[in-house]
View 1 (cartoon, helix red, strand yellow):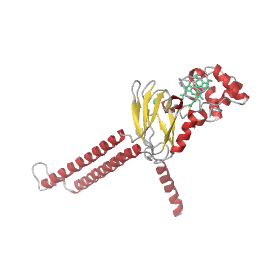
View 2 (cartoon, rainbow, N blue to C red; view 1 turned 180 degrees about the vertical axis):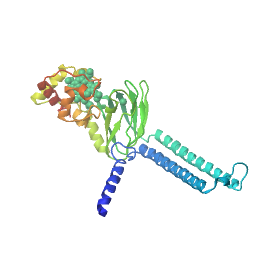
View 3 (cartoon, rainbow, N blue to C red; view 1 turned 45 degrees about the vertical axis):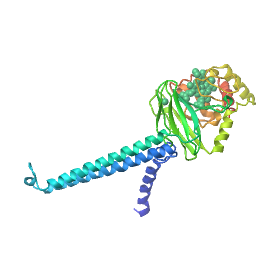
View 4 (cartoon, helix red, strand yellow; view 1 turned 180 degrees about the horizontal axis):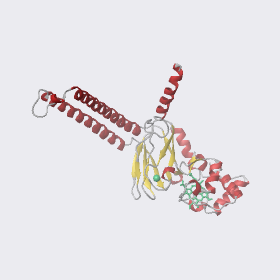
Length: 339
Ligand SMILES: [Cu+2]
């Protein structure tokens, strides 16, 4: 085998290992202050525990090696031996080492815990409400007409602290964006808070981290960290109402949407649709995924979802609404105007 051929699998293995350490949903690639602090605790624990593990294994190997060499009659059974004082010193040193390791771990985790509880100055406030099995996201504007209501997508400006207010409408869920911060539960009847200060522009993925029922695994969300201008622009677009559809198919679709059960559960700002059982659809097309990260937001996926939500996400709170295939096309044509 040539040198190169032997190196290739090793390189591939290393690439695979490193790939596990980066990405849009990992604690090992922190992109925010809180995640970085947690990463410090994790690294400290790894080093302290790694050193202790290696020492224990080394002493064990040494003991085994000595026991094999010494004849059984040499083994002291009772009473003081010449080695006793050295043994005591060794034991005291060992206890001191354990104590130092534990003190280090306790101090680091205490300090990190304190820093996690603090948000920086002028934080952005975002409300996230968990539902089986999707996320409602709200930003309060200076005026009620400037409020933003969206779903399954959290937008944050880079380098600005955010305080996320967490509530639940049904059962306990857990909000977790591994690249940005630790987990925090959303508990019915209670409000929790988590501070997040993103430091890197990019797209990340959050996931419900507390088993919350049948579709718990399909309860993810997109996190988009943008610069201040990008975030402003996004907010301005989200505040606007949905434009009236122009194409005949979309006009028909809007009528169908308004006459079928859709309006009971979905809100489209600027129309009569004002339901809140399901996600706000005013700017549906600005989102990357539908049904909480279950499908990419494409025409085919929208059609498949509306035609058979229970087939795609069994148990979801969206029922199948009877639509002919031309009606389905029209409804999707309307949804596609919601930019
Ligand atoms: Cu959940």
